[in-house]
Image (tube, rainbow, N blue to C red; front, side, top):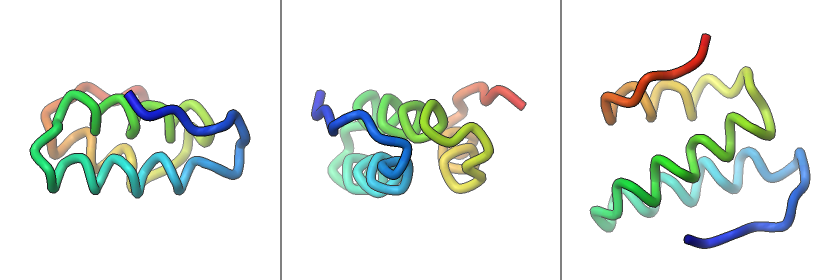
Length: 60
């Protein structure tokens, strides 16, 4: 798994990395990145929608 430095500013980076991983077919890694985006910014709607599209339960 790719790790980015811990910073609340990296929610978008994790989301973008997740998108790239989905495009490569690396769904487990993408899911992990979308979850990281939510850890940094729990109200990140894009990451929540991407997880839902992958049939992953999303905390409200």
